[in-house]
Image 1 (cartoon, one colour):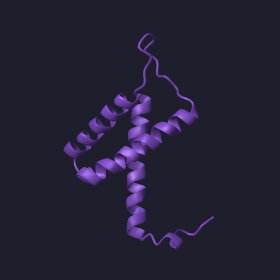
Image 2 (image 1 turned 180 degrees about the horizontal axis):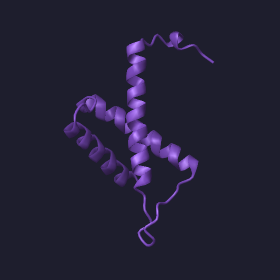
Image 3 (image 1 turned 180 degrees about the vertical axis):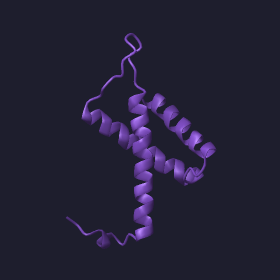
Image 4 (image 1 turned 90 degrees about the vertical axis):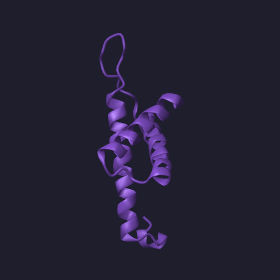
Amino acid sequence: MTDIKEFNISEEELAEIEEIKELAQGCTNYLLESIINAETGEQIELEEDNKKAIFKLILNKTMEFIEEYSFPSNEEDFAKYVETMLTYMQEIL
């Protein structure tokens, strides 16, 4: 495996990457838990490949969001982030 130091990434940048990944994963989990069968009211379980694809889409959109608005640091920013992600996923799916 390649050593992270070969990429010239500082500890601060690495921590920021981890924060972004955790934010995107939390949003993905929330979205996946929200997928409900309208007829039965039961949660729909997606295949692992579909879950990974959704995570990648949300991760990409999360990075775009942070570039445009900054990392959500309070409830209002976080609400805007979640709304942006859900709107984006509704448009994609």
